[in-house]
Every structure is written in C-alpha cells, then in structure tokens.
Length: 205
Image (tube, rainbow, N blue to C red; front, side, top):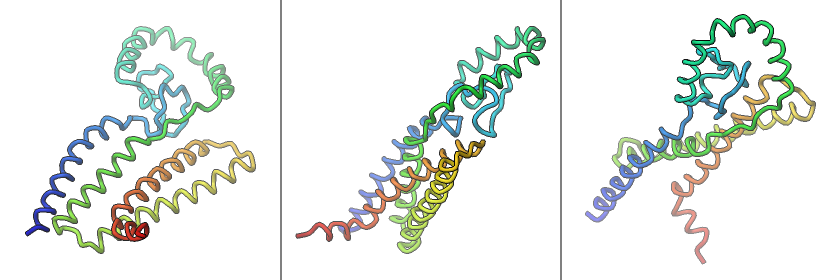
C-alpha cells in the first residue's frame, strides 16, 4: 500500500514537471537551428531562405523585424532591382571579409527537451508501460550515441583546424559537436537518477 502511494506521488510530481517545462522548452527553441540572428547573404548554412529579399535569412529574423522588412522591401523592390547586380559582387567580397559570427548553441532548449523526454519515459515506466530493462537500455543508447557522435564530430573538427581546411561544413560540424555535447552532459546527469541507489552506496562510509 505504501509503495502504491509513493508511486502516485512520483507520478504527480513528474506530470507537474512536464507541464511546467514544456511551454518553456517550446518558447526557448528558435526558428534558426544554429541560433543566429540576422544572418546575411549568402548565409552560414544550406537552409538559407530569403522570401522578402532583404538580404537576411528568414530563419534568423524575428517575426516583427521580418514583417517590417517585408513592407519596406515591397515598396523598394523596383529601385533595388536596378542595383542588385552591381551589389552582388561587392556584398560577396564583404561577406568574405567578415568573420564568422559566434554561434548560439541550443543549451537551454535542448536541455529542457531531453529532460522532458526523460520525464515522459519515466512516467511510462512508473505506469508499467515500459519495462525496467527497456527503460534503462534506451537511455544507455542515448548516452552511447551522443558520445560517439561527439567523438566523430570532434575528430573532424580537429582535422579541419589542424590542416587549415575552410569549407561550408566547418560551422555545421562545430554546431552539432556542441549539440551532442549538451546531450551527453544532460543524459549523464540523468544516469545519476537511474542508478541513484548504486551512487549512494559509493559514498557510504
């Protein structure tokens, strides 16, 4: 009877955490997967898109600035079309001279998303919808996969930096290396919860 009450309390706490964290995680995610703001032409990733033709990637614009730019560019479309060809070469030269802007990694949204997924699976485990073996093995695979991905991307970055190779993939590889590192850190912390009894035994005198 006591165990059932404890499980009910745990379920309630997990549900409350999921409800509280979900809107925060949704709000934290930016439309730009690389977290860039006002990324200029030609863009730092293959997903560059400029529907309002203002020279800035739509994914990196805020909704307010995007709508304002859309209105202004509509009125100036005819004037800009005459000078577009002349400015293309100069803008490309300027883009080469500008250093790559610092990235904003998805630390908070990725951390919250991983935590929410863990809480959902933990709730399913408490409700006996997931077996203990599957539940533990799933998060072992998450940790192992992120560890391998971090190692591979780190090795590629080392090769690119060591030999001075500059390509469009540098930023992408660096971004995903950081993202998988975040997953490793979060999933490692979650393993303390998975193996809490074993952890307590380690520090027993």
